[in-house]
Image (cartoon, rainbow, N blue to C red; front, top):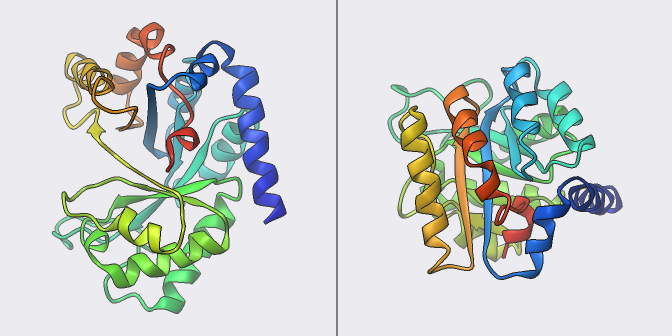
Length: 245
């Protein structure tokens, strides 16, 4: 508990120091949080994303080759780090979430074991979101296993909302686990113009909502779009932890 509070405070303090210009907007109503999924494979691209000067959050796949190294480094630099937990999609086995995923048949004991191992690899994580996981997000049994683990370790949950009727934040609320739900996917199409358009969609949504959470992925086109729009994004972007309810 004390360790997690310490990591959270450290992340917040470094975020204020590193992202002074955007942190001023924490005092304002409108906030955009961006999570970059699928981190852990590309060292060069990870460093380029860090160099944007935006307080984005990075979600690491536990078993990617550079996950431990890059997640530890990102945390030290003040970025919010998350576990991108492989989970069963509805079209499994056509889409395979990968090694040691959580499936509908995974027991509670085994679910905890897989979560513990992911957390061991990414010990500076402040939260978790699902990698794939459309089947799990509709299953209150396994979501409750996950929320119990998150509550025990004082971690938050980001619902990637890969299905419209996801129960992620519903189950999180039962366990008093902080939860934020994705409203915009940035890069379903890997084209810079499309991704910039999705960023503009997220910014326009701030007219209706006080905070928006958008999710993108670790790829070159997403980096290029963020780079080209970084000056606009600096006005609104905050670490994901600040938009949690």
